[in-house]
Image (cartoon, rainbow, N blue to C red; front, side, top):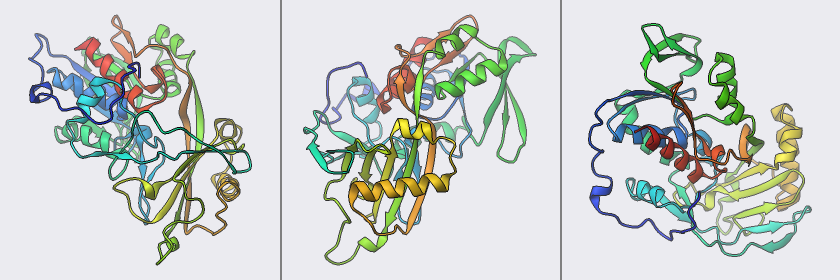
Length: 371
């Protein structure tokens, strides 16, 4: 997110900007992209548009990464990234390829709460719109990944367990994957391997495979904080004359020792009207309780939610999700890493920061460096 220019809307561009892929390169290469979050999909789609071949491996059942939307009987929860901003012209142009999918969220009354949940201040109106994908944050990455999936270039439920040189093509690579049922597969014939994973996962994979020590060394400088997320639904709040429970604001940052952020999911455009809240614990508290039992975490965060919002009613639905790598505390300081000699690259939001746009720019610039 290096551009200082803000976009109040996605600007109209000539159709030629994104109607056709770039001319075929003189030498088509085959890339393995590990990770189908924003960085991985941005990277893969750019490589394909440049005429190369890319296969994306994703251990989850669908793409999205930290833009994940968690489904429930009462509507979805944006369990990771809550919204995104648009500062880079290239991100704005990419968003124009999915018209109508993203809409501004009128979270112009973000509150700042003290440790007791009292409103200490109202944050100034944002200088740029807060955008959300509809019907959930995961929808944007999902839309960009769909052409790859249709072409058989997105392998979901495929966790990469090992990377090694291809015995039939010594300058190339092969990947070993494991499916949820334990079945293992080998995928060969790649000219390069691009890791679009959380920094800690990329570091662990490189070390376990004994690969790219210089890249591994660079990853050691990155620090990413964990986060416990609590998701609550109150369907009984949807009654005549009662549209919301508790506070009248829709988003708040908190200095409560357990909670850093609260958002009323049902206030976002394109969402179900059932009263739902997403609560994100503070980095320090999440780190302290990282390995606690989920039920214990849920109980503690429910108590903190009641203290901050005044909502004492028991939710009909409550679940927690742990993110081991949630918010970048110390970024790499450059958009990507690429070892041309080894044919291994890395991308992710942790390269530049923690915003959704940081992940897009990282994946894009890695692809552009190779295309």
